[in-house]
Image (cartoon, rainbow, N blue to C red):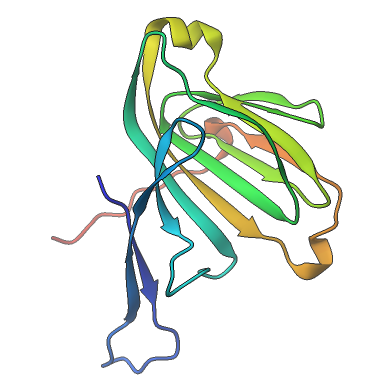
Length: 168
């Protein structure tokens, strides 16, 4: 499936087209695992604070196959990871080790610098899984770009849910 980002046009009159730009995602490799990257885009580098928008899967990872984004650094930004299906284990230079599962959110603030990896748990690698999720990269405000790094995990049970009926 192809992810699409609709960029709304701020300040337009009610009768004008509210859509400024439609961005179709492009396939990108992140260490042996393909994602659909919507941002950055040639005509729109960012949308608000979002500098990268990646859609992972849904991808079947049969037994023996894993997602292994090896340790790499980040500075001056934050990442938000959300899964619809599957599990990824986050490890970082702060000593954090946290599995993220569907409905939970991992919020990593790189600030002045953090090194992290995202990998499949060895037990899950034995049986395989389907992985499906999104990752947003958020530009920190200038005054926070050099803050101390942090990692926060919010379990699905901590995040409020609501349903919005769609008019069809």
